[in-house]
Length: 154
Image (cartoon, rainbow, N blue to C red; front, side, top):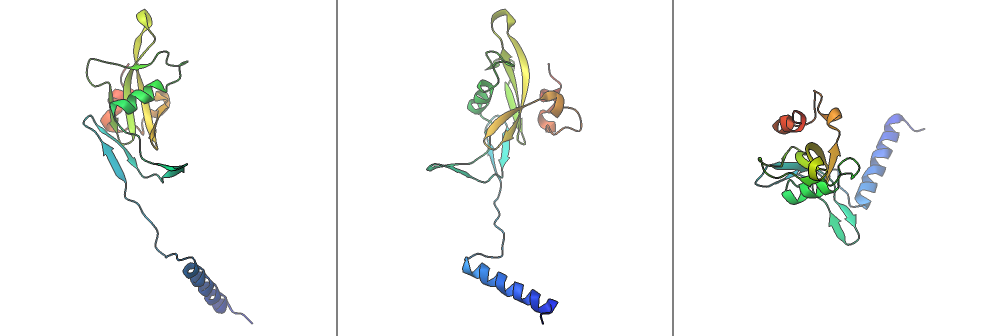
């Protein structure tokens, strides 16, 4: 007759044999987050697992560079943001902190061009636009370092 103790010992032996058979270990794998920075501001911290696409390895976090922010601007919906472009003049047109970015974007053209504020959150290596009406009310996820620019402008 099997007792609870003998069942527990049997399970422990089976688990140990299975672990040894697959060459595994009992320690968890961890990765150290890496942070990407540039001379404007800091960006998102990457704690994502790499994704394999074909023969290329795609990984990383959204970069706070002019090129990446300009790409995020060009990816904006043409319905909501007609002819979007990163604003020029009057100070830095974008700023990033802790996986969030704010940018000043010109939309429209000619006499109908206006500058609006756009807030993005990093998702992996992409900047995803956020609804300011949802992310700005306190308590807000938008970092204090960019909160005023992101939530208290135009």
